[in-house]
Length: 220
Image (cartoon, rainbow, N blue to C red):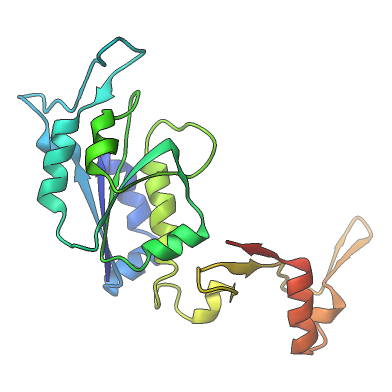
């Protein structure tokens, strides 16, 4: 079982996500465990403060290092754990990285907010910084969901049958993504017929495999 610990100041964002569909089933089968932790539990004072103004000035507030440090110290249990901070400048998240992370016992995600996170978190606390794309978001909650889902589907039993992982083509976790069709064989729109490729209907698995490789894309 792999354990995901998510540190956030908006824990309610995750309620519907972790309680639905295959992610919920995977938790029920004890294939994965997801803990959503409110960073304010480790905040300062009566208001549970977790952010402050940046030294040198800036546009907004920055999340403080102290509550994050305390949270990590409390929840990190495994020597195989990885602590990950989501940031636009991080390493690009892809299938290869997801496959590597799926071998861990525990992954701790830190979801930044406001104008970012005290740089000492990146320098002294986390094992890696990850970005899910070349764009900026309001926080790390959506990237955490993306990472959890991508990693979870690589864990045996989460998707049910191994075939649902599509065509695995490398030890790094890459797979072949290809076009798929289902009934009806012919769908008519304004007297035009949208047909399923004949090769998929003939039952020749060798030719079908060749067609998939020719028309598919390898996702690494």
